[in-house]
Length: 523
View (cartoon, rainbow, N blue to C red):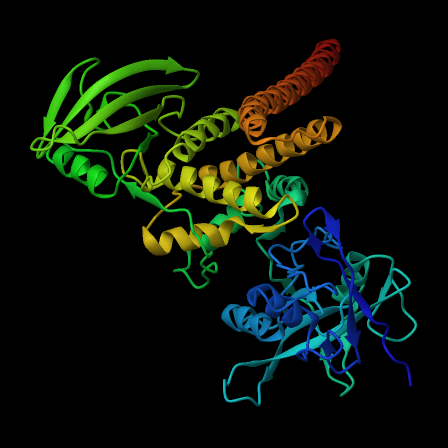
């Protein structure tokens, strides 16, 4: 009888890494005498949730916060990573197309995988849906197999083989893999591969002037067709936003009442007052160095200045009957978002958000940021989702899992229609990609630097971080713009070559036509 090898659990405690053995009997996992769990993930989730239970040998409490995820074994979108069998069945039943399949991690045996396929057969369970077949994929010596003699170097090779051939179950029933159920989840550090994959998929499907129905369009279209079926888990200490439409003349007083009531200190405006002759938002702030009564409050302009791509206004608000109760409000108006579409590159938006969040962090008891455009769903939703994803990455690290589509589903559950277009959906991906690339570069720079200690110096270092991060974002943006310009130049050269080819063909046709006419004249 083969006894599975024990596993080693390596949590970081302060600056040190400790090692805890996990007993693996083949039937359950435990920490040699603690609670028993059917899967390794259940064990980790339990000790992450129950702080104070896990202790080192010397009695030190080990607090688990964020897992250090390993890289996915494939970038293929049919791979769903950490997904339980029941949740896989729910996804496939919702699709209700026989032959739909996905691949996930094996929760009972880490290192192996499971192919889940919706079959033609009716399930014997009370649900009455179609039967879902779960087929184990074993990883042996870095090669993959479902049993038998056939071994494959990669998961993708195995899946391509069985998509052509089908798989025979132990019962003799053949299971056929017809269409994948794509995951929108991605490891943050690998988002560049996902963006390239979505772009390439769209290009392969694009024929002539027909609109591509793949890649980003496919994900966004799936989002449009469903009400929120999946919610992200509510984080323990969520970042809160107020998303609203731009002010009308009749709602200015209500807007400032909300600012005071919610203790807001930072307002983000992502539209101009007028765009292409259309009113987008009335100016609800006073003129420079002026004051304005707004219902029960008075708002006074303190300063106003222009920055790259945006304008900053500093104002003070106080109740009319409590002039000594004053709050400072910072108003950031982003000016470089085009009336239709999205900015050409996300670096400006990311730098803008870095400044906005830095200012929000200065107020210890600040209420939620207010974010608005005109309708309060398109640009506003795009900004909110980008900021939420970046907050997750900053909190959990570059190796965390993110899901842009499900994040949008969550915010739509609270405000309908957030993120209106495919272009905005793609822009979120590109913004997150650019932020991650800049963060990787920043981390390399920091690792090469000297460790800095002392509270005061850390404040200085934080300011350096903001400046450096903005510079890196700008650097990445310029690099990406140069790449786009080179690609445009290559496309122009290809078009010139095609034009020269068309000219040669025309000259050849004209030459043949003249030869024919000359022969006809001679005859």
